Image (cartoon, rainbow, N blue to C red; front, side, top):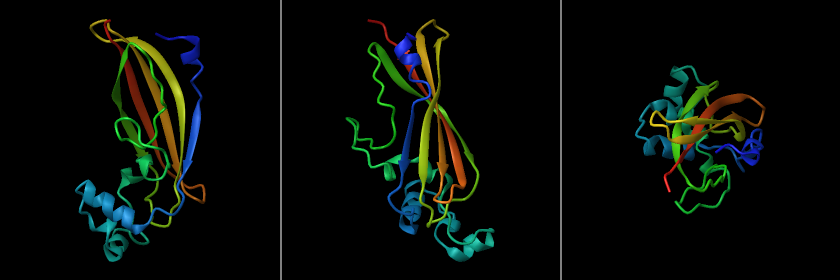
Length: 162
């Protein structure tokens, strides 16, 4: 499954910068959408009592690039980051994400996400089915260059029987 053309994708990078600060409304809407009612996302006094300067965002909010990448929706309706890699004879499966959060995100932060394809490995499932494992790293910073979070994401392309 691993070809020179696929191997050449390692190191590919794309950058998305939000067109404006994150904002309190986005923070409130995301917290409601994920069912997280922690008052630090909506109440300045509660956020200050928790050691913040004011309201902060739920941690994974900035990892949803669809809110600021300005990308068109794909065939499934998703408008966030993908590599757009089509591998005939495979089925794409999400392998997972590993997040590391460095600083709470505030409403006035303008987020930049830099995605880099860091590795592609050819493996086989326990049943011997071939697969390619793509590993990406997204680094999220704000307008001052402060590191906010990193996201290591794995996408698996499973070979399907003809």
